[in-house]
Length: 445
Image 1 (cartoon, rainbow, N blue to C red):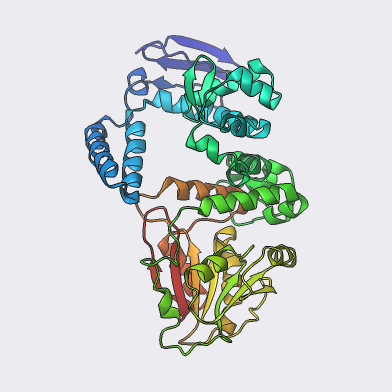
Image 2 (cartoon, rainbow, N blue to C red):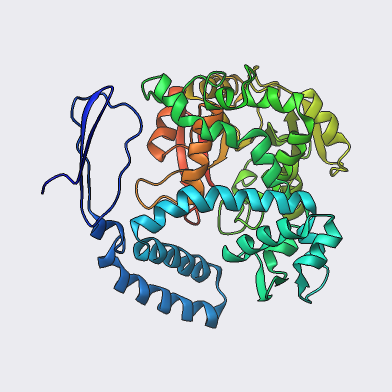
């Protein structure tokens, strides 16, 4: 096929081969004397994975009918996964590219603007439709600007259009009335996203090595700071509050390891002779005590002390949270040797994924001297990425951890290697559902 466009620049001649009148503009100097590009327009405007479409259509229909009949959560997630896979299979590469580069960033901007203006509370006061002009008056926004924002939100399923420039609330907009959910948007802008967007540049600087330095990664590059993520939050307390709200929303509605059918909680006290004076569960880096409060609420009859440990500023906040009187609050840095000796279980929830392997080894090795052989356990409540069919929430979080913490969401193989390197062994990895955090039960090797 002869070239339809040729030219020269400071680097030399450029030859571009094009099929189906796809135009390519080369503006930057090229490194090679001659650069050739080939674009097949038929591929770019055809379904991405056409051979998967028939099976996915059947799967959506089958599990959709089952969900409508049974209202079962497993069926809901199955049909949701199938529907997403169907969209990706039906979508053309051209459509996918536009979605990635146009829609995702612009939708985020529209959502954060709506959050900041208070559009969602104004829309969600009742079920009656609201015009763009009414919402502009309620929020003090420019009517023309807000109408444009609302059209984009509707185009992406955030709100429901009921007429020209007229909209009705959805479950999403009602949820956005709570900072627990709406804080996610300013939180990501304030302390997460710039680091993620800087990940390609940060990786390029290290010749694409796997990040391992949490004070020299995408986060520092994106936010132009020498600080570690958590030190940055200390200097930006508004973002810290937003981050904590976002984390509570992230964990809501997901199966908990202490639910019946997940981990055998009563095995922690069966045949141990544990009493009320003994330490049952030490929650290391436990923040505001959400997990221990949940444990006490779900298992009020289980004996033993519940100990909440964190840094001084966090402990001070936790003491003002009205925790159950049976939860003991203690200042402790998990980079120091564990001071509660002989506990039945040392528990960490989403702690180790914040740190690269070298720091995780320090944390784990600081627990080992406090453990009683044949009795003490370490319970690690974290994502375990499967070898196939990984869930998008988990892989998204893995990229965030790579960018902002130089850390990782680990596979089972990686978890076992890390735990064994600390002088421990994995008893069992307890899991109930794809995309849900597992409980890794460990003991002294």
